[in-house]
Length: 226
Length: 104
Image 1: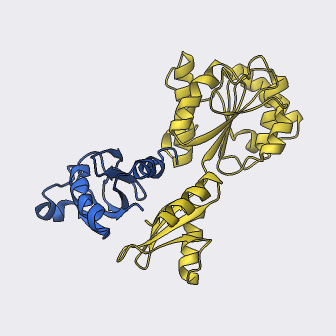
Image 2 (image 1 turned 90 degrees about the vertical axis):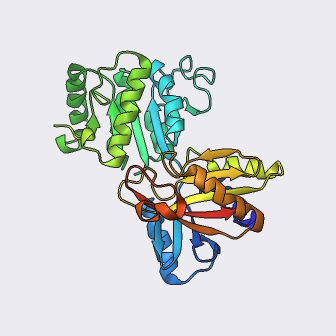
């Protein structure tokens, strides 16, 4: 890899621009797509690899997509949220914590992540969650969680989870119905949140949630709810 | 990209070391790391990342020394059918191809 290719690749990664590093395996020649000129078939294969987020080969070229990190949007700067941060970072997520309660959402409690003190409906409107976003609500406070879930259900987020017992969730479902969401939409919400590992402590709850997010992302049977 | 092997490797290069990057480009069977997984090695023996569960990193580092010296990339085959060629195989029975290039 030439110094020029390396610095261009790192600049694209830093700018969160999707880029495919294409390497001709016979001689090591490299292209960065879509920026560089390439024949149509290779350009199409690179574009498809970026969408699929999966490396592939095309006529002797190895196509290695580099997409911006997946996003984790956590509503509620609570203890379990703190426990999730290092796990999420190690798992490749860029995390934003949303909590209008400034006493909870401090940089000291939440090092290394983006903090939003907006109300969740405003925060979600600004963040525009997409198919590479996971949304988790942890406050137990309907004033904060409900508008976040309302926005989450209208987004393409691949994972939506809400902390709270079955009873809490049943009441939440009623409120979301009144907000106009049908049962199929509401069924997207994982509640009680997380894989059932009998989590008790904040790190255990964080682990169960992160494990469920990965299981959902990878299409694992564990992620299916009866 | 949480495991930013490229960033780690480029700091070694900036510190004046020769560096090679190995990337899994194709796998068959039960290979432990998917295509795209990276392993970096430096002339002083620093290592980061992985291309297997630890089965072939030693052999890749040995082969990478030549690429660090002459800059010629290599495409290495590992797996059952290549055990005699490389004297290392994958206990899991998987097969993979690893592309080795010099960084910078």
